[in-house]
Length: 447
Image 1 (cartoon, helix red, strand yellow):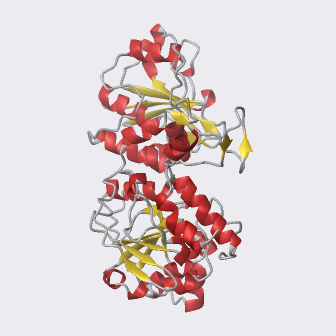
Image 2 (cartoon, rainbow, N blue to C red; image 1 turned 135 degrees about the vertical axis):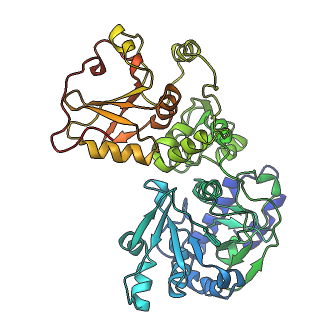
């Protein structure tokens, strides 16, 4: 395959993002254009010359003016991270796959030498010298650096297909950390700059303003609007499809080839190319389970009155009978199933009480308190049911309890997914009907 094959790809009928990714990955592997880790497939390529390309970064006017810069954690951006630290600017690095939060602020030790700063810019340094930045932090990001698999001179960008750069940016918008005027930079090999059909772009796709390669600095002049936040209904729309991870060129029944796909955002590519998808409604819930900060942001935007309903989820105002009917039809709920019946004892409890069950045996009150605060759902009072592995959360009114119920769905402590329901919905056999049980001896049971 020649460089001309890449450039001419735009003229191919029905080309998809995944076609472009695989052409780039194949080309770079065939020409030995990448360093470790190899092969480059399904990665942001750590191309040879990445450090040289990053040397353009401090020369950008946007870099010189910026005080806080977010740089993705991939290997080809290591030198860009070093330049941010060496210029005594604030460096924010997303947590891998957003599993433990959105950002880490890299804080080098006092008196750090250039060698130490270079260590801080590595993946190990990010782990050793970082401080988490939560949703409550008043962060203003002046410049964003993202990795790319392919990018066009017009500013169109294709990532590795997992959607994290798009999701990170959308979350930053929702936090008020970035705006439409915040410049976005990508650092790539020259062979990764190709023509990309604009028809492939969707509203959630992040575009770039500057492209840095070993030989060029490209100001794209891109005027296409960047994402304006998380479109929750979009996530829900995608969630009606499920993609299984397949090895490269794995053949399934019917003789259709399905390549390895693991993307929330690139599902359209799979449908367009192979016409294979099945309705299961799992992807959005899997993303919520894997990314606690996404659940927290969803909860906050819901409490703020924003439209956050996922496609296929219960609509506001729907009654319990409708919800139960959906379950009986086989629809899977996000979180544990609700009790099928109510007891008179449980109904005597106020509806402003939420019961949390299935707590791990060794759980302490402080651990549950911390988890509740992280979700923004601290109750007025907490009654500990340690021997029954549960707790009652007492809120100001039923509306507050219902909001907490929504925010706490999918909550994990240790290896356990907690059951969270309104206390008045508990069965007779459930521990909330018993008022026995003492708090853990080390802790006060109230918040």
